[in-house]
Amino acid sequence: MSHCVATTRAGLRCRAHHVRGSRYCFWHEPPYEDARRVASMKGGKATLEDMQQRKREREERLRNLARLEQALATARRLYGFNK
Image (cartoon, rainbow, N blue to C red; front, side, top):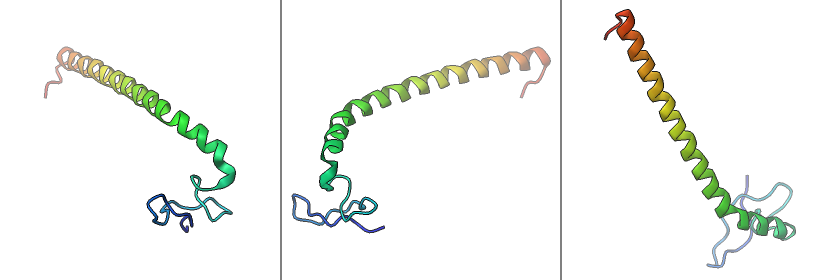
């Protein structure tokens, strides 16, 4: 896949891959201006919400793991399967 032919503000060639059927990437393709604006507005908020969701899921997995370990320890004690 080739790269975008646009030039960055720093005067360097853009290193992003081009959109299929175009010579420009998502960020430099003129018809995508509205989509870029929406993506830029949602980006930070979505990222924060995603991070918070992942944290809640990770905490839930840790609680489930602790419950499972406790259940296994109880089963080992009851049935004599000590390591």
